[in-house]
Image (cartoon, rainbow, N blue to C red; front, side, top):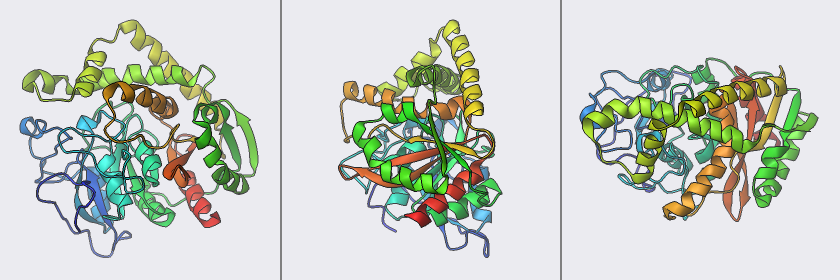
Amino acid sequence: MEDRVNAFVPGPRVHIRGQAGGPLAGLTFAAKDLFDVAGVPTGGGNHDWAKFNPVPQRHAWAVQTLLDAGADLVGKTITDEVSLGILGENPFDGTPINTAAPERVPGGSSSGSAAAVAAGLCDTALGTDTGGSVRVPSSFCGLYGIRPTHGRIDVTGMMPQAPSSDTTGWFARDAKTFARVSTVMLGEAPGALPTKLVIATDAFGFADPEVAEALQPMLARLKKIVPDVREDIMAPQGLSVWSRAQRTLQPVEAWETFRPWVEAANPRMAFSVVAGLLGGAQMPAADRGWAALMRQEARARLRHLLPAGTILCLPTTPFPAPLRGLPLPQLQPLRDRINCLCAQGGLTGSPQVNLPGATVDGAPVGLSIIGGRGTDAALVAVALAMEEAA
């Protein structure tokens, strides 16, 4: 199928048939160019990465799992450079087109995977989520997307960034496909519906008023599915404080991950990526210690908010996708606000699902549901129930 949205990496497109008769037979998938495919260089969104890293000889666990389940791989997709981005603009391979809002960014760093699914070029696609890289493009492109419980999905063969936050995720246009893929990836069918719902008032207050208003019909449906509802604050210390902690821990790990390559290869990199790595290299020990303590506080807070049978909801992003091609000074404040609603993923490791269904000025915005660690299947069940109730 023609790549009319610049979702796939340039060059010949890989195509591998899935195992016949599997539970995902008849479905197609794409893989973000952070996942190994045997015999194909893993590009990582940077044209110098593959030159200094060997061609993989085995498929990544996630790729192999989908192939074994019968899905056909139809290509590898563009990613923000070495996954260090949240908006989806790549200076080497270009910016994939967000078919839901073509003048706006698709979100990153799993930009190509989200764009390919949104455009109907495949049924599902693999992405990664460290600081929001599945959740944000899901919201911006109007897709179902999941950041699973940290550590639940085997990340063998997935290019790392910050291992204490890295996860494998996936996208779909409809809840039934999302549930089929999730059942295979999680090794568990959609679970029982939760019985209690917490509305994160600080997160709804932080989002643009237009976003909070646009999500109200979805919130009303969610309340019918989970009728025991209360309001509470997700981050008593402040959403920006949680964000600061994640923006302290993640760059430090990213620098540790990429330092050997940077020092050996002196690769070509975008200014914003270099700035982030340098920030991690220069992070004071006192800041790292504070952030580690804040991570423990954030985890304790979500354990308190999310006992068995309880989920929490919030806007996935504080605004719809920004316009493409904005200058750097305008982008950083946008990234900072996005991080304020995404930091809990990397800090706490809790599973989160984006539910599509709302728009602001014609551009998608998503509603997120978060559960306690290990409750991924219950979130998938909510996604199914929400689509049926629409």
